[in-house]
Amino acid sequence: MTDLLLAVAAATFVLLIGYSAYKAISAEGEEQRTAAYKVLKLLLAAVTGASVVTLVALRQAGVL
Image 1 (cartoon, helix red, strand yellow):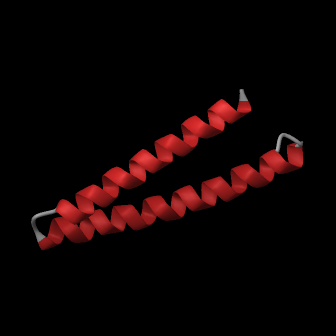
Image 2: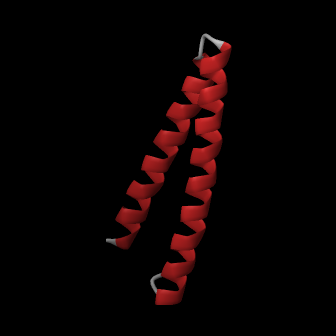
């Protein structure tokens, strides 16, 4: 069950990052492109931080 939850969370993060990267690449205006890259950077930072905290918590709980 834990493996399924981790896989779903990872897939969700991959889809979010992929979509924001697509929007950043395909933006027509400079202002849209700048805003899309900001969102991409924030999303990457949030996903990386959340992943590290989650993995540490699961490791300490003995799940991983």
